[in-house]
Picture 1 (spheres, rainbow, N blue to C red):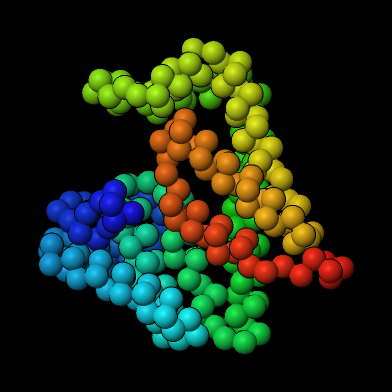
Picture 2: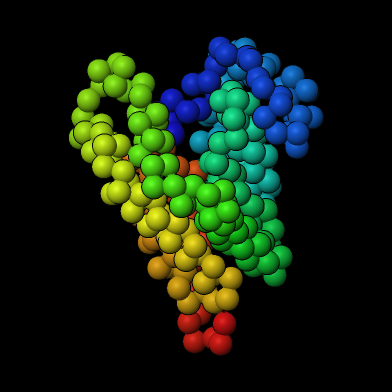
Amino acid sequence: MLSSGVTWSGLQGDTFFSIHVDPIVWLYYLTGLPAAILSSSWIGFFLDILTIGLLIFMIRYQGNQKFAIALFVLLACFYLTLTGYLTHRNYQSGIFWVVFPFMFSGKAKELAFDADRYFLLFFYFSAAIYKLLDGALWDTMHFSDYLSGQFAPYFLEGNTGWRTHLNLFFAHHFQWAHFIYIFSFILEMFTIVGFFTKRYDRLILLLLICFHIGDWVLMDIGAIGQLAFLGLLFFRKVDTTSPE
């Protein structure tokens, strides 16, 4: 994310925020804190350094809950600031939820891991249900039309490459595009298995990584925060000998 400029200092300068994006976070925007941070390049630079420092300390001292709490709050504020900056709900919330279990210890930590896991499963399963209910799944032209609009700025700028050519192919062949859309629905729907057993967590991990790679190739949506979230929850050691 640092290399792509999606950081506190990378957002510096634009202090306009759409507080209508989500009523839940109105209070955060109304404090004026995001605008104050992004109005100063020095504050943004300091928070970037602080974020990296806390990540290093968490790797070095994994049992320290104070570092985890500070990093969770900092990354949550960054996510909310980014959401207001983009004026729409961005689904990179995994960038701070990934830290959530480390704020606890002992049995509470294990319960926090499970809570995070179920939240993530619901995140993708509810997306599949939305596709099922909003009617887009039955519209064979839906995804090809959406692809055309998603890459429109690249075409206007004359920015061509293998991804733009692939995008054009699916935009012009709606049957193939619709097949990809149905396949993505199946990948998200498969997460329902995780509500009943942990045995297939690594398979769910693989399928969701494939989903996000495809999303990046065709839609140019790089879900770095969500990939971090997946890595934490699904690379945990799972006891496959238990009845669960």
